Image 1 (cartoon, rainbow over the protein chains, first blue to last red):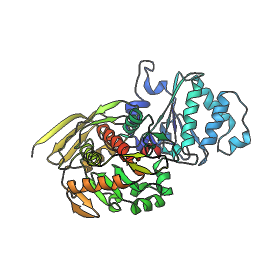
Image 2: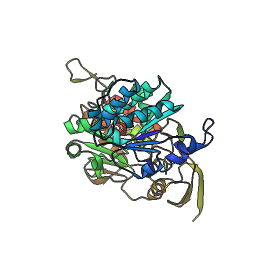
Image 3: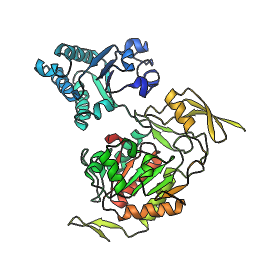
Image 4: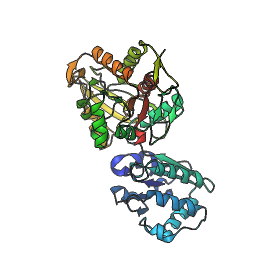
Length: 300
Length: 115
């Protein structure tokens, strides 16, 4: 098990005990003793205590480490000088590869420490490639450590409805997918979009400042159980019931298992589902549009 | 006040989505959690069913949900390239509605995955 750029001990406290590290399985009757855990990160977080091996790399060098690992698993030569710039040695990487190949079933859990640093989407792509290529030697998979409750659900729903998991552009009437172009941070920082509907998120507190400025410039609509930072810069805010606490429905766990919610409270506010449906029905009453060949939208 | 107990409740704070939590609810609040981690416990205790906020706000002023829905629909319909973003703290049923909405307004739909 390799955790890369994540700190489950503090961010996903039950990940070790309930899902990954200490649980006993059919082929691993001794649980923790039968597993090897490696942590790759730029600093020694509390998760390092749980790891058998901790590899500290220099910030922003994830892609270089992944690329070197991909070369080493195929016995291709790597430049020790380039590897040294990552904060690790070729021997450390060779040792890691040896352990990876010795595993009967390996997994790389990658966190935002990997996907939000220099290289961004290419780092995630690199880890996925590494896991795919490891399958020439043993069973190996990769799984992102999901931060929010139902972010996996949004991937699933968009996958079966549009064919792509996130960052889907429907402006031409058919789905197009290109992370870096149609992903939110890039759209907002470039100032591409001219309205925004924010559902259960607070980009006003987390986005880069130029993105927040753009949200304040355009008509922004927020659906949230609380009046958030984004609500304060929005034109419209609608309070909704809190998912899982007072709103029922289905959510996906990070390993893509759908689970039903059992809300304990009854909210005085409508659910997100109800409000989005009402907005959709209000839009559907207006004349439909189709994109025309000159790029302008035409009402038909 | 009566205490209601929900067994095997599902926590949606993080992607682990632990579904073995026991919740003790009293009136509008969850007063006790069993089995949840510290993050999950504060998540459940911080979300109450109290009416703490106005139903809706338009330009910062309290409004009815009906007016807010109408205003939202107008803004989204009038835009050339609206963005639908978030989706990570709402149910799959709501996400499905959001994809449908994004399609008829001809927008971009994106979640926290892209971060």
